[in-house]
Length: 203
Image 1 (tube, rainbow, N blue to C red):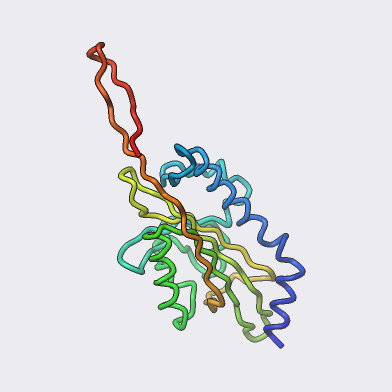
Image 2 (image 1 turned 90 degrees about the horizontal axis):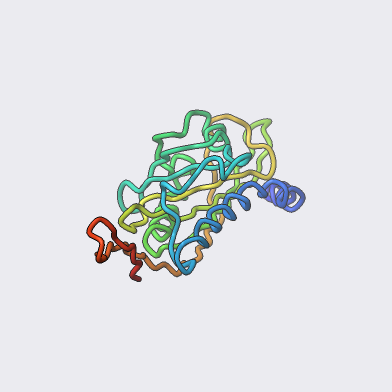
């Protein structure tokens, strides 16, 4: 009965509820399209809160700490409200029940190393008088200055009411999309004028 209820919520409200994470992914894709040949990845320093705008509460940033493990570096209010506390500095796995941790670790590691975008589907069980709901998370790779994926731009939204109380979600699905990625190294080539250099991009 609970599964039917939460799936119904997703069907009725999904397009509207998940619009913020679709827009955040579109913002990330726009940054990616602006890389040489559209084959690069946005850098962590390229993310501008003003570009995310009204959807900032749905955004967060993950930092890789160890294989399969990352922490929440920056968090909007949607994730913090779900966890019932300030999410900054917490392990990302804190948002999920223990049964999801192994699959979550593999999915996160794939996002960093393939690299790949990830879509996680969530189920938040009913608790007492609180209705259950479903949710979705997107994970989008970000590179450091040396071209290594060290962070993920995240986006989270719920279809139904995720009450602001400490709780965890069940991971009901993971979907990866591998990315074509070419790191463009920057080299300064000398010219006839001593103080002038030409910026060249080598694939």
